[in-house]
Image 1: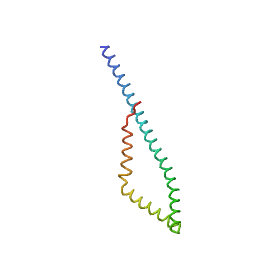
Image 2: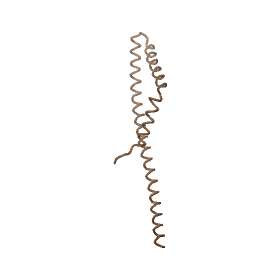
Image 3: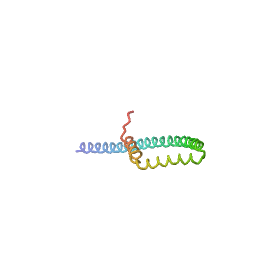
Image 4: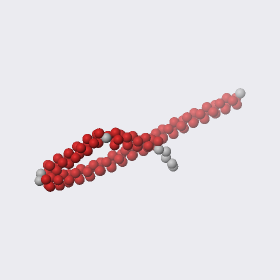
Length: 117
């Protein structure tokens, strides 16, 4: 009878160890996925900021050039602003296909990605 009790205690102890290890593994995987997603989004934001700054200076140059061609500087800025208004309207209309779906897919892909080490 004592042998059965001892075996049961060992089994219970191993089950507790397994549960603790499983929980710890789950936590580590969650941390890894969160870090991966955060790093990916941070890179995209930094890259987007650099592209935005480049775009800003190029657009100022284009506005000044168009304004020079038309004889009035403000006309160049109005034309470039109108272009961005049309672009913003198109982006708003197609926001689901252009923004929501790709970002959702990226996060899901990162969460389901298994790393080979």
